[in-house]
Image (cartoon, rainbow, N blue to C red; front, side, top):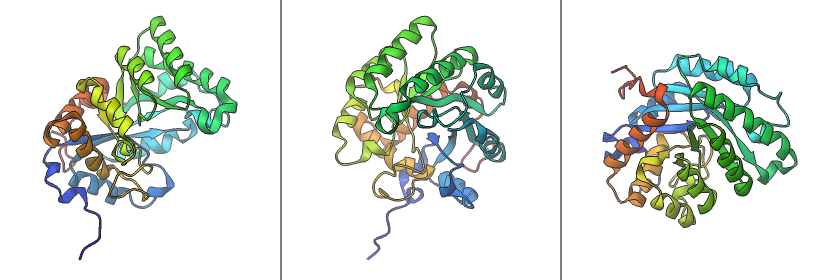
Length: 284
């Protein structure tokens, strides 16, 4: 009997291209394994991915990963949990980084009161800077929000009224009210492996109620691996498992869900939409 979890590349679902809209390919978990990881992603039908910089001093390394691999794009910002440890970013700094052709988003930024409530003031200051950079560059803001629903909703409403910007609420696992606020502002919700966990019925209900054209899918690799890999290192190939759950939640076929989330990604991440690599990694 074979107890090895199924690999997405062996699943007929991969006939449709997928996008992993949020991962962290620079993390030590992937050291020495990037070529294999990207090849496994291709086999699983993942033709594009966005690797996220969470500390701006690490931006050159993340940029180099994107430059070295077709279909890999990147975004940069200061993660809220690092807001008290890192130098405060400037709008000009973020705008300058955005000139790179593979730089496609601002962040991740946001608020995290679960572990870092003591730095809330710094997190809010950092978030405001990232929002202004998103306005100036017309690139989407990538938001991390944890245990900060009320403050996050207030800031997003106020800032959007002061000047529109695009946004994705990445790895969405907050409440229904914040989801409604984000969707009312025209933002996107991104589904991670959390939505595939058995006890995540409330999160699945939030996605089921969302407009389908506002849903993305991601891994947040190396974190939050979906079943059947839960508890292990996550990687972009495993977005296929989460996408299968997403298809069930939205009541559509896996092929249609892949096409939907890819189109949604292109609509939000317009710079990445200009290149559509094949599953072999070659430009089409």
